[in-house]
Structures are given as C-alpha cells and as structure tokens.
Length: 268
Image: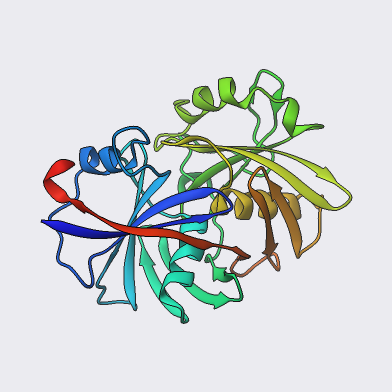
C-alpha cells in the first residue's frame, strides 16, 4: 500500500503528516510511529501527525512522539496543519478542541484554557501548582500547567547553563507525574522569555509550542512578564497571548519541507 506523506516543521520541530481524510489507513501502532520517526531508517521526525475525520469538529489531529507514544497536544504541529489546510478550522485533539487560523507564513492557534489543578496536570498528590514545593538539584519551586498536555516549568537565572539533557529525562519520569511530563527551563530577559524544553518521548527539542504556551502562562501568573510575550526557543520565536482567565493563543511560523510516498508494509 503506497501512502502519501507531507514533511513539515515549525521552528525546527519537524513532523511527518499523514492525511487519513483522503486515504483510508490501517490502524497506527506505536511501533509503526516510531519506525516512521526514526532518522536513520525511517522518514525522520519529532512527531508523526495523522489527520482523521471527526464528528465534533472539522477534523481530528492525532500526535505520536518519536518513541511511538501517542500524546494529547502539539502546538507547533497545530500551526503546521493550519498552514497545510490553508483555512480556519476547529480541530479535535486528545487534549481538547483547538482553533487554527492561518496567517502569512504561519498561524495563530487558540490552544484552549490552561489548567492548573493538581489532578488536571496530573500530579500524583495535591499541592500548589504555582509554586510547587519540590526540587531537582538546582531546579527549585517549579510551576505546573496543562495546555492539552502536562508541563513543569522552572525559572532560572540562565536557561542555557542548565544540564537539561541530564535532568530532563530524570524529571520526565519522576513518580510525581503519573503520565510523565514535559520539562521547561526558562529565564526572563527584558520582559521576554528564553526557553529550553525536554519533551517527553522526544528529548531536547528545538521548539515546543505547548511548552512556550505553558511557560508564558506560568510567567504571567507569577507577574514575571505581561501578555503578549515573546518566547525565544533554539529554533526561533513564538508570540504568546493570555489574559489570565481565558484561552491561550500562540502565533508563529510553520513551513512545508517536502512531499513523498512510502510503502506501508516497510514500517508496519
């Protein structure tokens, strides 16, 4: 079975997109997603994105990390899909409904209302999620925010100096987070945010849209910055808006890299 794919990226966070609205596909397993994502023997990507029909929205977007695990949300992929579809859309995800609005060279995405209750992150037991009474070495008093998927955010003096490649995988699987967690370290400079992200199931990433949203929300809650705020990641910058109560909006670029085909059984 020959299957068409589209390779896209948002700030270097790259995706293989399969459109199951146009071509009926077999069920996607975690091993298949991991095989597609493999950068040596597959097509190579951070996430496999599958677009499917939906009864509650314009279409459904499924997201598989490079380890094959299916996750709830991906902000960079949402912008890529907006560029691909080329028109406003309401999209069903496992993290809730989101709204896409294409713009010149990218998109503005309504990522929904952020959640802060400990059992909505989720965290293993009740605690304050704005100033969490926990630490990992020098990473102290983080915040936790769910923007469709779970994030823990630590504000530091210099995000570049944090050994995130060592601490990220440790924090990701900490028993405090029963569904694992995305790990964000950020510093504030002149009212803007510098951010690095360890993404669960992926590792260090050049950009993470939900991480940018979660970190901006946490910084606004702590009165570190005001909305809208620029969030600078290794792959580029995003603009995040949040009024303190309603949905969080993310704006930034996304582009198509190339298109191709593969034989399904080569990866099944």
